[in-house]
Length: 250
Image (cartoon, rainbow, N blue to C red; front, side, top):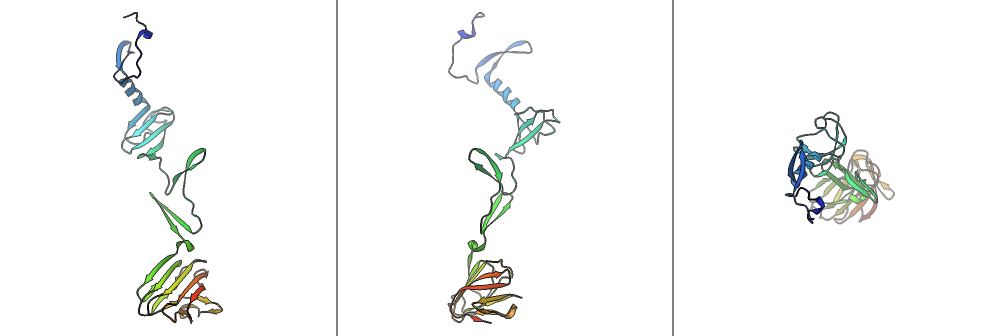
């Protein structure tokens, strides 16, 4: 058997973890399994410990380190000693390295994806937070409807209001409204509606303008009257673009 060549040994289709191979350790011939070789390789390629390895773990380029406490994976990008090796975080809790609030990985054909935030288009607002992205409509695209069953309501720009009460419903213009934002009032209840103004505000219907400030107003004459207005001077002036019924102007 001592003169048996390696080429004389039978060939196997697949190696098994329990297979025994010949080795020399400290000048002494030993046998070891492929599993032992695998364990040795992994322990030198993928290190593990508690906490960030920078400043405490030596490494060579392309070596990995897993932080068992923070569930974070690092790769060595600069070979060095325990004090000089540079470890770069590449994944955290199963995800890519931490991004800033609202960032996503966005792909492009033929190149690597990049971390970037979404861009708000026309009439869209985006608010980024830790672990969240809130996308909202603004301008005419963010228009909402409200049923008013009480007798008073402070209005908000880009909202429509259905006045639905047996008594008069008084709706007050918003104190803040950007140029181009819209307000709609529709009558439903028997009491009709009135639109009150804040200081320095006016409303315009055709060639008529209300008295500036809290003394001016619009009012329905019939229960089902309606009016739609656009803010034509930010915060201050609202111009009627359509109406149904005879609007009383003060």
